Length: 544
Image 1 (cartoon, rainbow, N blue to C red):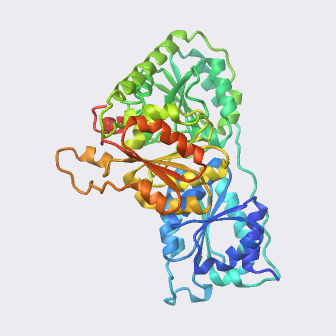
Image 2 (image 1 turned 90 degrees about the vertical axis):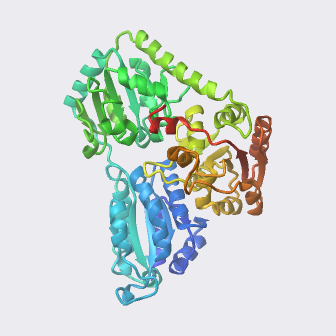
Image 3 (image 1 turned 135 degrees about the vertical axis):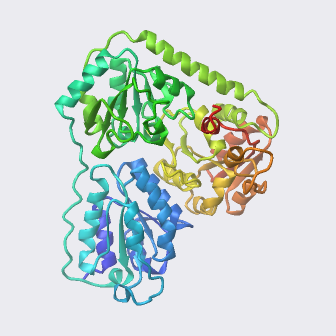
């Protein structure tokens, strides 16, 4: 008779899982031993939140469910930040936690805590099997729930005794079903076509729905057919490349003042798979003027019209909607010339910031050098903070799926575990993790994970010995809680078994970057920078 661990591994294999992101613990030994014997890839990490971050990144990269597996009690509570990050990012992670034996619930058992209660608010669905027989069925249900409608994480807590128990009559997994790809209603398509065909100054704002529906080709064909400029954000970054003649670049107005100017002057905006959330000013009229007519396409009906009334709402898959939006466009050359002028003016402002060549290095000057030194096919994992914000404003997104961000929870530090998953997905290609010294501290032990698993990421740390963004927000000459030590993180990486260099001048940047990628080893570049207010912080303070 199979054990619960064997039934669990059978079930995840049935749904295509070959990678388990985990951190070992007493509750997991049976299932990890079984998975290892089956030849599954066990990616053992150093912190449970990082485990879920990496699984979240893997799900976003592969566009299919991934699996995180952590022990119960503190292992579970550690994982909650990763689960919440995946929840706000709409990432289909199957999060599984072990727990005390099922017979010991509510009896003061070791590490007994209400795992289900604390998880339900940050997942789409959660369950705990009452017996070993339910394990296959609930695994199948978890996969179905994770991919239904808008993707998102789900959770199973599985008691340790159920992994060890045997059964001759498991309840079968009836299948996870297929992701829903609803087609748009004809009346919505007609209204959208009427608005777009009559528009003189239209713009497309493309979000993660483009990525999840695999609509990169359709977006490009639609934009080229209609001559509508495209601005991208979240997982759509790179799905429409920044070097395309119709690209407006980042749809984040805090990092792209050209986009803010275009949104203010446009007469129609087609919003594809993007929430009207904080990135779009919660729909406020300073960013999206009242006169701007909105067409919003989203697979989740509750997102349509949230924060801002829309003129046309289409609850449907982005790809099928773009395929249905067929019409002839008029001459938009005057509008496109204006859009390009705004973009050129913004890029000129960034270039002027890069003229500061003094030491410690100005972030803009560093990124100007980095842009020329990076491999052309690099994959990016971005952290938060002013150092990363300068880079996000200055470097181009050119590859679909090649611009990994933290997500709406803005879980700083997650760029490192995200980058590990990105390197796993592209083992023979260059991956760069761009982070700050503050952010790196959250999951710094994952440098060890990179070395142990031979993942040759290049980590670039902007080191200004402090929480730079918060320094700027606090203002004034004296700060509270913002100062750190000027640690040599390149030496820390060497201590973990990787390689590293310390960069203090601009002439060191290109040679160090070349050596880092050529090494095919986990490599960290410790870049000594000055804390300089980024475009994001300028915008947040109202002086951008």
